[in-house]
Length: 633
Image (cartoon, rainbow, N blue to C red; front, side):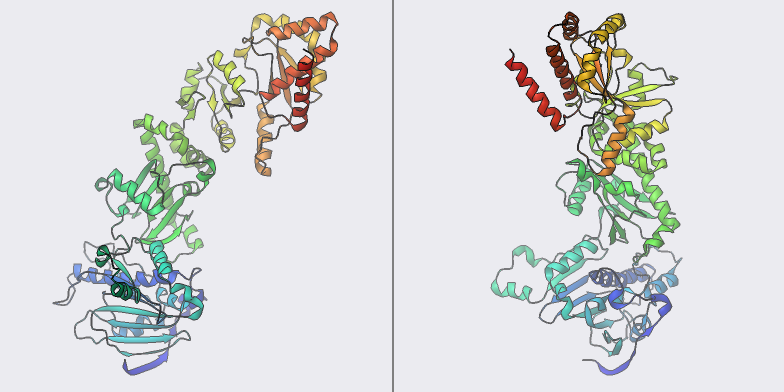
């Protein structure tokens, strides 16, 4: 027990801590463990720094660095120990009794500019507040410390949550520091080995110093019961001190990248590809970004980019550091020039953060361009998976669009991939053509008849079946003057029409125009056109502008179902079809007028079915009329 205890009250530097202290220091109480382990790591890093500068006293060595987190549920304590630089009583007075006077910051300033292999320092704490996060879960905190300086006596410090402390000579025999938390009754959830391991895994998985976890009582029980496995006798740290992002890309294998991905993101599927970022001065940050495999369209909306600070986890998906559209990715970014405790306003107004964000965007764009230009087949193989990332990025960021526009490709209904220029070349457009149409469908099944018509005339059809495609093609049109995306059922292209049957079309319209107008109703327009394909009696079209407006209204109203609306539809009757000619003859004879009307309605309903889903009333009428016609046979 400590002797000759000195008593006093904590000196608070209010200009540094503002209104946040003790229980309101952080939004999540679990961060207390991250802060204390980070402090322990700093203590060891300082020892390494002094050693590299040759400033350790004679006979003093760094040794094997380690941090121990020990849980004693019986005593309601959590202890964080290190074998770092330690503290004297004077240092405890200076750095602990005066809140927010950061020892880390002073240490960095003192040794700043001195030559060393460890020029980056790797010291985590800058604010001096982290230690007091212990009081978010503890009502009493003890420190037992012994300085690295030979001859210095061990120190002891104990403080209640009221701020009253006592300190004096301690009994620690080895260099380093123990921080002992006496957990309050309200925070008993933290006296769980599972909970503490979960926190260590979340925040400290890649800390630069080995961390060992021990639960007092459980270890002894295992030994007494003889249940300790052979493999458990060997002590293993809970963290990886050399994460993959800290290595040079040339030193990493493809399997290491995949293994790291599976470990960090608990995803059994291999990523499509990855980008290793190793930015030097003046940015100084590292990371690995992965393009994950996608199982369904809605999964694409969620990624996980973890932000680290000197190998300490800070947060997930901070859009100020990683552009919002790239949060769809999975990855890790380590920014050692960001403080561990940062506010959103700090990030928004920090020039370094903006440069990091721009660099990440550039690296992603460069990787995509490299794959497209050098590994086109591989690129096409995972285009369907990365397409939402690219399209969303282009919509959100003008610079990203400019960097990636040349490697945006489109999938055809036949499974081929073409750039916009390749599509135009294949369609026979001159480079200087003022108007260029791009034909597409949103469903190969729903628009199969239209696909067939275009394919018969060797016109390439794209498949744009994702929710974002409608917005994306409007964006592409705005960026490319004269380019117009047209769904295959929006109009009858001149390439599909037959010029020789125009007179016949006029004659058929005279005979059947009124009949079809009666069965389709006032909202649907009826036209007669001779098509090159004679097999299809009629088609329903809906103008591109009307359909896009309808799609937009459904999207913004939250109704993504294909609610059929026939306003603005046009029924194109094929004047080259034998059935239409036969129906015209029946109409001219003036007999079986009711039968002609039934057949005209049936032709219309079949054309509607090939273009969209029937309404409930239309379906009921169609089924009833079909059975009626069968009964007449």
